[in-house]
Length: 409
Ligand SMILES: Cc1ncc(COP(=O)(O)O)c(C=O)c1O
Image (tube, rainbow, N blue to C red; front, side, top):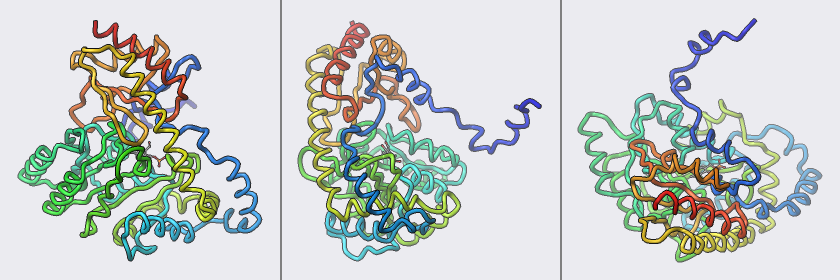
């Protein structure tokens, strides 16, 4: 019997039926050829993965905790890992009094984005997002039928006047904002970091209009220059901020491990949701990670990652200066951390069209328009500097410089 397409289409939920395969995934398929130097992914450098330490830890832990590691675990997460994470967070932020009701372990932050979407969004609900924003977050909220309203991102965070103006318009049309999704530190894709003033202002506005702030912080600990700025969670005293953390960019994404810190009422609901999603995050991964942390490896790992990525970022910025055509209106961010640079071209250039020229020249980036919740712009692209090695960064930027030169002359 052949597959009945009509029956299949009619059986789909409204949310999934309206979802399309991501353009970016389709384009990234073109990037897989070995001759292409790709700046498109957001992958950590594989040389940063602690293979040897984990070999020893896995073997040792199986001996000690094998029966727990291979069993189902609690939905909230391994209690030792949660304790270690809370202790570390308290040390970093000086926040006292958080306990196990404030934290849930998740199968990395993408799962948390989905669970938060499930928790707050009914079809048609309004979610405020940065323009541009993280594609995976937008897709998660989209799958619950959110209506995304974008606010322009500037070098020091969103445009606050526009933020407040859009909120006023939403409220005066009788609707409300469910939450604001933000990546305040070393934004993906834009690389920017919010100023302290903007952090405070956003909290003030969210409190005034009474909506939740979803703070996504995968890059926060990857700061290469200047002083650390506080988490929004740290600045908030009213419990409206829920913060997502992940081990993906500071340790290893393959373990699919992250955590959420927030008000006990929010965490409690996330536990109920997670029970229906996957029962628990793999205890095996949680226990070896707790062991890794307890042995004091995590902080030194992060320091080494920072040294490597900072060097690669500077090499990429130098290569832009050297190989990108001058006086042609090309701008790029100069982030103090994270994994990405955001390049903006004159408006007449469409980076989707240019992508195919780049591929012909064996170099790839991610098109900027993929990162917009609404009103996409077409003249930007994202460059990753953590994955390609130093030589490839220079050669790849050189190739891209040629492509840009042709397009702009
Ligand atoms: C802003 C942001 N949030 C969440 C994620 C998801 O990461 P993971 O699910 O590996 O924790 C990423 C990955 O690149 C990201 O850039």
